[in-house]
Image (tube, rainbow, N blue to C red; front, side, top):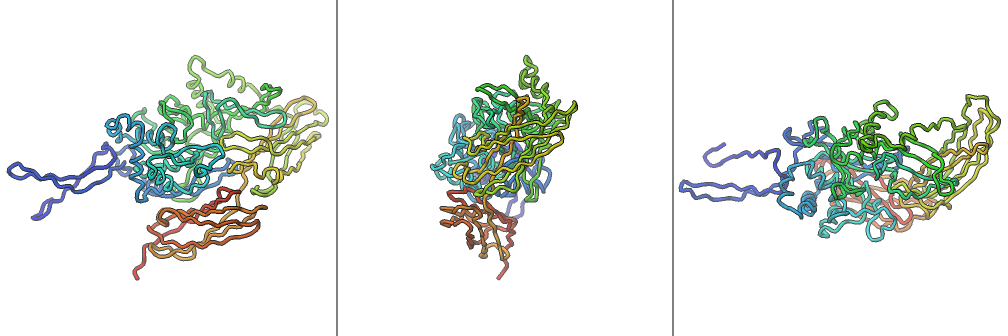
Length: 616
């Protein structure tokens, strides 16, 4: 539109334009053919999930507010029977984060090898997601995070001690692209969520409990126990993570047949290579559910993560002599993400697979296994063997129960519940059992350390009889012997003296740290002081040494507030007052982490609504 003194021009970027930095110039030609160019400014073009032409179009404002605009959320950890939520500060709108996102793309091997080709493909969300999946880990490149699944974090920060993505991304950028130490799956996935939301791709963080890492593609994970109920290290690379965290990004898949649009799995944790680099995805969630494992990218690997079978063997004299259990439904439990518009957890297991044991689930499993085991071996001998084995003829059933929620620093009371199964044939006399128990520190990757507690129980069971047998795992047995995640596997192997038949009972314990509480007394307003009180009681039998508190929260605090709290004696309570000035309006989340030598992660959060500053 033109009036006497001004010209108004509207620009529309094509949906297939490359994302990145642009300079906007206007060229004005005079009558004589001379032209003058005026720079109008710079802008950054992103993917646009509000545009129906864009491959990341998400036609729901409620979902866009959650998966693009929400700058905090939760990561789900623990075990399937006790899922815990961890607050996380994504902070994708913090001042420098968008520049760091493009810095990551410009340090990728794809860009360094062929910059013009890489730039030309940055209009393709599948390509950008795949590059980012490789760049969040540092296995091949100057990626953002270095993984560490050992227990020595002295050269960096324990993965448990991060509150959010902003500090990680800023540290990586400030160091010129030196990988930040250290990350594990939930850190990789949370940082990827920040980056992808920042670039305009709807993204969420997803946790899978009892997650398989199947290297040989045979859809079975083998674990081994000896007669003393001790879980043994396996020479195979296959493992079962207690939980594993990845991302889902929302997009149209023009590279796949129709029907596979929507959520796609991307996993930046370096587990195995894909096309030569440590990256994973995008794998269509719909393809995983339907067993279409031939579809790109890395669908067989993700399919196995949620669907593999678990086979537990008893080793005698170093040889696998007896199958203790064949679990067709123990892998891929409680697949979880944050609920839209709520702090609650949403179970999305049904997006990944049909109900366990249903005809659809088993037929999809057979279809996927035939594709993964290649046509010349239409089925696996092991799968055939296992399918034919019947474990229902055990004369007794065993279960381990917790008397109460286990707290780190206290004795753990357990109860063994044993009952006799009704026999079809003429019942025999009493059955005598010897049950050997073993407790081992459980590693996040599913392996164990040497036993820290053993016990043996002799029982006699008549027909129709039940026994409740109390057990106690003393604190002194596990003190100083657990990893930072405070996980214990208690296993028991019961042997029937009359037949020599063995049965396995398992219980994984995650020991809870002390709880902290956060109180906000005043109404929160931009620019006005907000006073927060944080209270922590040390419920343990030991002191907490070198306590450090870190506060974070996009829109509330610029960066982090760090306080040294010193030592908190057993049974004592500390109350800390922190003042800060909120920066942005709207719903915000304050994340609080207190770490000590004894417990790495005592976490809490507080949702705070920040109002606009009232006129004085």
